[in-house]
Length: 457
Image (spheres, rainbow, N blue to C red):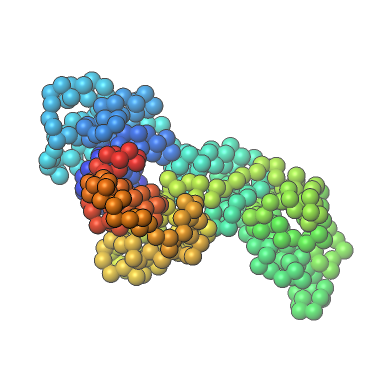
């Protein structure tokens, strides 16, 4: 899926192009000005930029120059409602792919976009993201992980993946195996915390017939099943001291002894472990062996929580929308701009797993083709109110006396009231102008004008 960045100070134009391009199968990101656009291109892999020319702050031509300095191969289509021969010449001279005036013909711009993305694909080097279709993410943090996977996967080095629950640690483990030299051998996962302590040793190392009650036959454990391939030990921090000691022997001597057996078995297996605990703290507290930690963490990989890679949220949303629309037989194609903004401002304590759950529920609840904010049910782990304002605190205090109120004049008082209402609305909306405009029951454009007027940006 190619990614197109739409840059326009008009919300209606951003939404129109977003709907048009998503229907054509593109992933769409948007920015209201050039400065915001540069932040987005720094954190995402962008295949095409469509930018207005006349915008407040950094205009489209300035943005074009900045984009070309960063990536000369990136195609940029310039659009404008104020056709100017000088602008057209400047744009094409500075490397714009094309120059289109508003209002434009839909078929025309679709044709130009197809030509631009096709030419870019021919001239651009392959992105590391393309090698990992099983992991959804194009932000800078994920690109670093992709690069690291490509470097370590062909080696036999053990890997320790750490990160919060729901970040996708097992997907990273599978990607390492799939890009290794033993991709044709087994990948055997086990979640250490999901198996009772009394059975975990048997699950890992196997057992012989009659070694304990219920052992009616010999059983191969995880390491025998993964011999020649990869064993993935999830939640490694849950292992008991005895199991840790036996695992250390597997790592050091490449051998183990099944429960009830007197004979050792040789094994050649790569171990990838994962944890949501801080194992260095566990070592200090005496809960985890230091020598085992260093054997496991030959190559450590940290998978960031979703709140640290929010630039990937739109792409994840599109992926889950497509997935659950097919499963549920619905035609939910996209999410509303305000709905996406709600997700972008949420901290996701449950990470990607929570986002998937939210979108699955949203598709189930939605009766239209677009997910609206009321179909997004978030958990109670809301952001803390850092403003220090009590939610039930009155916005305005009464004037001490009428003389003071009338002495200042109606215009001055009304200006003060307007500013206070805007500040309070922005506060309640988490500095989202779109949500604040809804609270104030004014248009987004009016609010943007007023925040500039009162220097609130």
